[in-house]
Every structure is written in structure tokens, then in C-alpha cells.
Image (cartoon, rainbow, N blue to C red; front, side, top):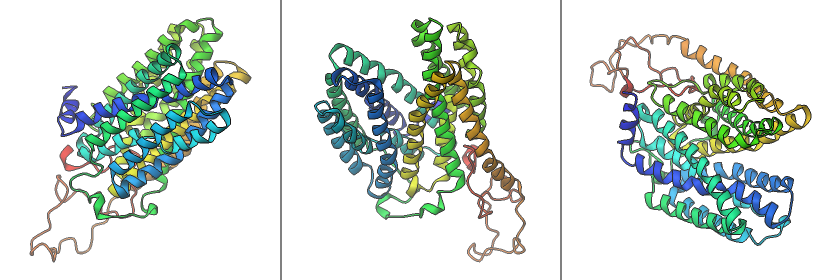
Length: 447
């Protein structure tokens, strides 16, 4: 019974192949940061600060590029963008290994801008391939496979870089990106559902119709979630090093990733989703006291369980919410912005935790990123409360509700609701914006 949603989702056409190809495509992308860091430190003889600057340049480029590539997909289709980004990124990794540091800095930003959009393409295609009744388990599977990619990618990158050298690792990344791009090109997953207007129709929607406070709130929660995740990574290392238990770092981080995987798996089985904010707020709160377990690695791992179990569900809920609130013709750009929020959060989390650790002590790393998360949750809360108030307002019956429709041939127009005419239509309010919740506008398939 627990696996039924996953069985039904994986039985949908192309979903299984999409998840497999996307997981493999994300492995070289996940390895990129650590390989670039080792190249700057080992081959170029620079410090970790210089390596972090290169990473920041690539992150900034990727954050700007993701929505641009998404918009190109919305307008031109998937394959032209895959060709552009695959060729550009392969050239980048082949050339980057021979560049001096100050030339590599701007080139890294360009490489990030033209990065293969494997993450956002997978989410956009999931939204196109799945009915809303199966979208939650599909996005849960996407989060789980993303975790697997990030567990495998950096480990493989470090293995190649420390045995054959960082330059060989960079060439390996070029090969991996090429294979990923070719795989996605051959698969060519749809970016529009069968009932949606195809890319060739040139349908356009103005940004002001979907770039609203509710969408921005989802992006804020997404970014804050990855701030907490990235900061927790740094704080775990610092706390265990301070207590002389650095050898247990890999075990603790692996357990933390496992907690997230289990949480994401369980969340994908629920019938109705939970608002991203309702998952993220306790995740941020439960991160605050984690540093108290720093004297014992096993206690630290136990304290990470509650917050860790909410990591993948939060990202899943945010992806699901965006897929429901954005029109199909703007979904690529919206998913690109979602990917940018994830990337920016990762880039900010480490420095925020690091600053707190350097000034106050290791345990303060958890407090710092947890406090940032709580602050963002409080800032987003009014938007969610306003949405709930709007949803609770009863729709006033029209004075002509009983009159037959002129276009229905004289009979009463059938209700879109499966519950009969007494239930107000979710779309009749006109002004109500879509919800942060992943279970908004629940279709009749789920009833």
C-alpha cells in the first residue's frame, strides 16, 4: 500500500527513463564544484578562498543562466538548448584546465551561465508527463534521485582528482557532460503535456501574470532551505573537528543524507501535499539546537534526524507548488528561477555558517543558518495566511446561476466539481492566486 503511489507513477510513460537519465546526467554536475576547488588549490597553487571565489563566479553565472535557458526552452523547445549548453560546457571544461587563475574567474561565470540545465529540465518534464494526482510522488522521486546524484558525484570527483589529478577529473567532467547532454537529447522528454499548447504554438504569457508574491514566497522558502542545508554541512565538519571526532564526519553526513532520503520517500506517499512553508519552518527550528550534540558524534547524528527528514520533502513541496501555479508556456523559466533559488541558497549557506563559526564557535553555525531560516519563514508567513483567508472566503452565488447556459443547448451546464453543484469552483474566484501548498486546485482524478 505504501509503494502504490510510486508504482503508479513509475508506470506512466517515459517517467522511468526520465528519472534514470536525469540521475546520471546530474552526477558530473554534482562533482563540478569539488573538482574545480581541487584544481585551483592543487594545480594553480591558490588557497581555498581563491577556490571559493571561482565557485562563487560559477554560481552567479548559473543563477542568472538557469531562468534564461528555461525561457529559451519555453520559446524554442528543449533540443536546441541542450545542443547549446552541452557544446558550451564541454568546451568550458576542456579549456578551463589550462587557464591561469584570473582568466578562469570570468570564464567560470560564463561556464555557469551556459551550464546544462539537467535539474530544471527534469522538473519541467515531470510536470508535463504526470497528471496532478501523481505529481507529488514524481517530484519526491526526483528529490530522492537528486540526493543520490549528490552522494555519488562529489565522491567520484574526489576519487579521480586525488588519483589521476584534477586536470584528468576536469576532462572526465567534459566527457560526462557530453554523455548527459546526448542522453537527454535522445530521450527528448516533453516540456508540455499533451493537453497543453505546444512550443510551436508560440503561446506567450506576460511575467506579471505569474511572477506574483506567492511565487516569490516559494522561491524564498526554497533558497532558505538550501541555506540551512549548506550551512549544516559546514557546521557538522566544524563541530566534529572541534571535539576531536573528525573521522566520523563522513558517517554523520551520510546518515543525514539518509534521513533526507527516507523523509522524501515517506512524503511522496501522502495523498495530499503539505505547504512548503509548513515543512520548512520546523526544519529551520529543529536545526537551531543541533550543535548541542557536538561532544558525541552519535548524538549529533540523532539530533539531525528531525531536520534532515524534512529536507527532501521541503524541496519536493516547492517543486510541486511551482508546477501547479505556473502556466505551461512559462514553466521553463519558472523552474529555472527555482533552480537559481536552490543554487543561491547553497552558495550563501556555507559563508553564513562559516562566519558564525569563526566569530562565536562551531555550534553557532547551526544557530546562524537556523535563525536565517526562521526569519525567512516569518517573512513568508503573511503571504501564506493571506492565501488561506482568500481560500476560506465563500464564493457568492451569481444572480443568474440558475439560468441555463446559452452555449449548453438549454440544459444546466455541468459542474467541473465531482462533488455536485454545492461545491464552489476553485477557478470561479478570478482573483485568487495559486497556493504555496502542493495540494492546491486538487483535480477530480484525486477524488
